[in-house]
Image (tube, rainbow, N blue to C red; front, side, top):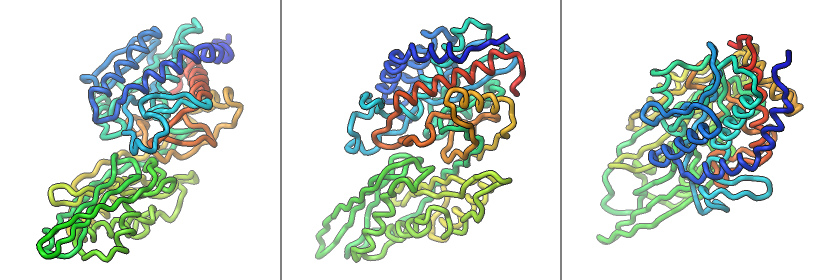
Length: 454
């Protein structure tokens, strides 16, 4: 007996388009930047209340660190992992609309979080609603698990994994289509270099300030040049402008740190520690692939599958308490030993009289293509879009790293612009609706069937 009619699911999603857009706009108006815990909690409560209004059980756990919205019952659990926090707006002067005041124009919904990841949450919730609306008993449980610190250190998911049973399999709609069954690792390293005392005279670099988040290529950098002549001190401010993008694909933007190093080298400044560190960052990481520090990956393949190469991006450069603090975001290819990368960067810092003061590692992901749940998701994509499913590499990091048997899947379609972490972030209305349709068919295939998808 046929348990599910794709047409009914798609019709239900289309009938709720106005409602979905309105919900997303209200969601985006909550400026839930990761370090604003009050706004993040407000965003989580918004999602939980929306889930309750759609007829689901919804609860906040771990003192508001994670929210869970669920439906159905059974021994197997299909998990959907997403997050309500967002990165900061970056340079607000580059936004054509207010980052937290959503605007709909030319078929697009603009605002911080529309694509990463609030649009996907709305699509997931209404997909769950469409499946439940068929009136067919659910043979498995669906859990939409919402984190609150995905864009920074994953204290939320780390706690959840320790304290709660995990879903058997699932997806995180925080990447792209067709299917990301391989994901690079994410390594965040902080290097610290003690600076020398101010010179008694001359013209020298005294301050560098760049970066707003550890996973964003800095689009602006400010430096101060201090000049001491005849007992008088003057300060000159120098600025460089680049283009902010997600640090997983730094080649799409322009790093203002590199531009600052190049600009200052033509200004005849006296040598000092700060200038040396800035030049070191430019020389060692300017090639992106780690060739100058001996970490260039010769092959882009692992067991015949494309995994790309190691990518290194300095994302933050600050002068704090007499030290130059440099944050390097690394996206390493599957098969690379993350500990080796940490060791090389530690040695590099020590060569320049500094030290490695912090290292956070989120491992790479590899999920076999033949897994039953992966095949169900693939078929849903093909049936809704009419496109052939393929398996691709995810360059960015997602909650797929947090739990086993999770793939990164959606929301960006092939050929679409990826504006995650950029100024003027948006999701098209069509993208929002198509995601909900694909998710509904995928959820239905799994939770309405008595077969195991483990």
